[in-house]
Length: 283
Image (cartoon, rainbow, N blue to C red; front, side):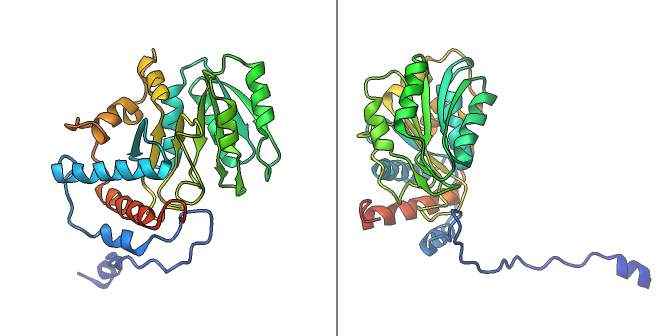
């Protein structure tokens, strides 16, 4: 080998050494050290009964954190945006009317995804930095009485504004319109009472208040929302099908659906365990 050949040889890649950061943005946050340690524990397969026992504990703890004990709760194997899309594709069919409160980046994303899936979107917009008043959302429902869903962002990541979600749920009580809530920024850090507030579908992520790495989207679905899922006339994407996901995450014996991100589940288990040990209200 001559000098030119040696110079052409690729240099070996150094071992990964990302710099330490104090993450002060809206997310991801720094990961709880015990969650990182949990990810170093022995790997199990996604069809191992011992892993299913861990999933059972995760589902039970998620239901406590969401205060969602009557419906279905599970950690969707994806990010918060996929949790958003899963709610839309399972609960809305092409041509359905969806009312969306838009006062920030992620309210606009809900509207965009609903439109991409063929919904007739009614945007109720407000200046960024303010939440959309519930009175305007309810007026939009009065103007569109057949709306199948109303969607709002509980904590708008782009502005930090919190929506008066409990009041909206109370106002929709008795309505056939489902209530979807983006709880990405709020789960584990701001009061949420899924059952008492009349929420039908909520989604979040693991990398904000919960303190785990990105990679899972905890979702909660009310019984009447699941009736909507089971009665729809058009198919949904396989990877986001809540019926198939319930058969894996919740029902026993397990029905295989996908290879779960096992180490992320370990991390979620640990931060949920810590949240409940501290107390949801204290957290």
